[in-house]
Image (cartoon, rainbow, N blue to C red):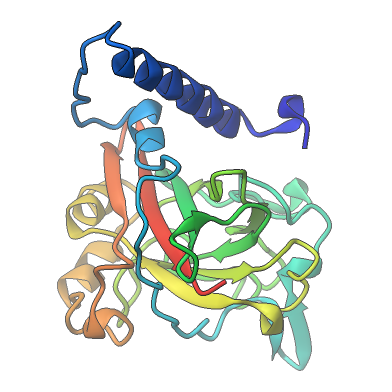
Length: 271
């Protein structure tokens, strides 16, 4: 895909990586001192999480259930198969609106999710050209295409193809916490966009967990009234998915309710 057609944040990541490579060359040549980067929530900090060739070992992210609401052609609602992967326009970065957008959008605190796909079977090489289908509940804990009143909506679902560094980026909202589950997102990884026509073709289905501190900040804000009490009744150690360990699935999150949040996760795939 030509650079002018890339989403703005991917162009920004590419520019930041190019600048960092240039700085690295200058440092090696003795032209510049090495300056450490402090923590924060800027886009540059997010980009710095993902640098090529930084590791030769990584672990495969655990396989998890797609749950009852995948919308990937593997189950049905009222006898009809639901498959968001077949929707026109499903390949998109901003997944907050339904397709078409006139159907409606999901309200909530903005969240940008960045995943980097690495080949766990080949020295953690970046997996370029792979497809990721991401979906999650809205701020009320309901799923489009399935929940009562939302069967005609398909928001908070989308597909992205990984860039040369194996990176995909989704603009979405912070999901709510519904009864019995820790706040999370679902995703499926496919070997190519062409393969992403049914959930049966995925290389890995897994889930991303959101850290408690960020969840409590968001759930104290307007629009998430039920989430805080649900969060108080669950923990990562008692969740039926993450109770066996969440280290490889717990995203790094930064930001604020006012400015929005960013979540990043490295995903080792048995490619």
